[in-house]
View 1 (tube, helix red, strand yellow):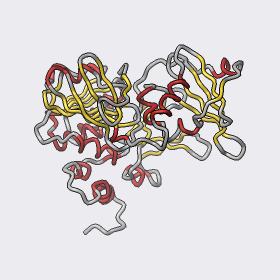
View 2 (cartoon, helix red, strand yellow):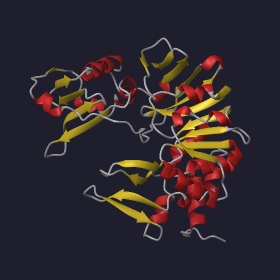
View 3 (cartoon, one colour):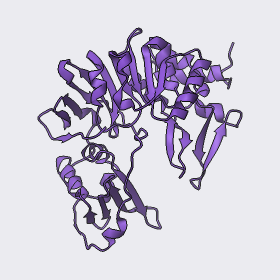
View 4 (cartoon, one colour):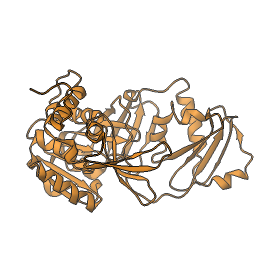
Length: 361
């Protein structure tokens, strides 16, 4: 009989899966209890109090407890110490898998193999022969394949551009993405059956849409926030120096609105934008910076003075959003998504409400 304080992998995994389920009836809880997460995260990175990354591996104190916590774990760092791959927060993984409404025998395409953990969970319920997963990084695919085979999971995994799907294995009953997207890739929609469900991170939220005939789809965003690794693409540096020469103009939008109440709608209106903040000696936010990959840049000081430069007038977009959402943060589930061959639009409260065209992938 397992003691309550048992810290073995199996005991931790059982408690972990039960806590994720929260007493609900999700069919995916069994998959979380069967699949050892440590097989897919043999090491990960954490930051110390100075922001320096250090590696935590099997055998290190607290390793298993961290693996079986509801925490996203950074598993790969780029040359400048920027995270490039992670094992997602398990509760968010469960929420997205639940949203698929998948059943054993459904064929699933996954964009973003990563560590292979999500593909293992899917294989555990749907059967390995019904799971296809892709990642842009060949090294990640090689490692994930080895880890999957350790658990006798053999989904079809390969290295490539996930936005192109895998037509040789189509059509798919379900599609899931575990990398941040700016819209649902059209190729994935064309490879999905009519009635298929697609669950994908768009901006800082997760959209769930149902595919209909003719390449159309519609649905809504889930109520949960989501901050997935962005797809790798070249980005120009922000032109903060160029803004210093400008006197700027007054704005009624608070600098901190970018960091909280407008954060989600801004991720739809300015796909792929990046932001930063400055703090004073007391630790309070003194200003916020905003930029996009074309070099467009904006800053706003807590005094209420904004500056912007570049081909896109970023602060104008912020002010437009503030006028749409004058009070409080809008709920993610009040946003929806409509897909037609002509394009994709995110909207608020209804297809005829305020909307934003989703460009790129």
